[in-house]
Length: 140
Ligand SMILES: [Zn+2]
Ligand SMILES: [Zn+2]
Image 1 (cartoon, rainbow, N blue to C red):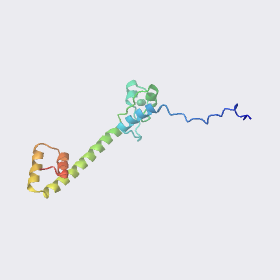
Image 2 (cartoon, rainbow, N blue to C red; image 1 turned 180 degrees about the horizontal axis):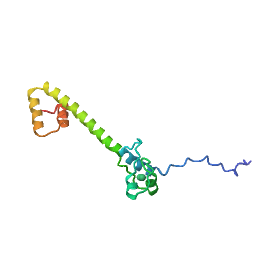
Image 3 (spheres, protein in one colour; image 1 turned 45 degrees about the vertical axis):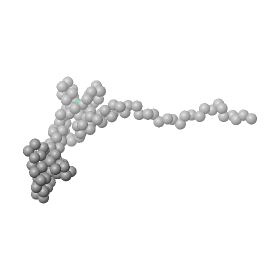
Image 4 (cartoon, rainbow, N blue to C red; image 1 turned 30 degrees about the horizontal axis):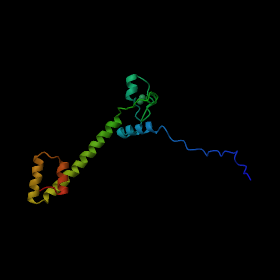
């Protein structure tokens, strides 16, 4: 007895194609991560387009022209400056909290510890270091 199924080759149910061009995408993501591009109505040309006097599509993170040439697209826009400013501001605020903490800690500090803090400051330790030392109790 023979089964009559040998001639039909079962069609492969279609393997999902592996996404092969993820390498360029991930490189792009790295760049994005660095500059935090954000569309904010600023219509500036990217640096490459400015240099070559090409009309820039203004696409972020990469404009059409740069995408076609497969080169890095970089916008020297005001948004980035704002972002740096914001970061500095946050940094200042954090520092302010650290000074507050420092002040309160010193108020309640035993004499020897405050001497240690004093020494640290004289050694030009910055506020971060001083506060960390206080928190860790590394003062004697
Ligand atoms: Zn461009
Ligand atoms: Zn570009």
